[in-house]
Length: 92
Image 1: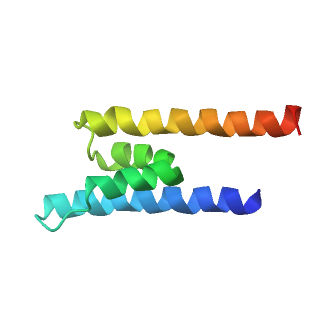
Image 2 (image 1 turned 180 degrees about the horizontal axis):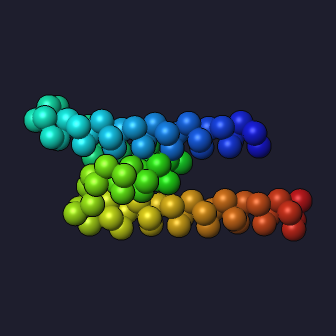
């Protein structure tokens, strides 16, 4: 359980940083981080970091795919984790 929590912390920090780096690159006209990669990081557990990065850096906030996509991914992740822990608590 500790390793899972550590994994979530790290992946959220990575996506938060990626949002900041992508914002910097957007401002300076540099090569950008692909949106597919940002969504992949969110799907594998970094959705909270992505949402916080959007707000802190004011980045991708006008893109509906990010405005609604990151929170939707978070809701699905919470439901899956809730189901997993409910199963472990009540069945196992």
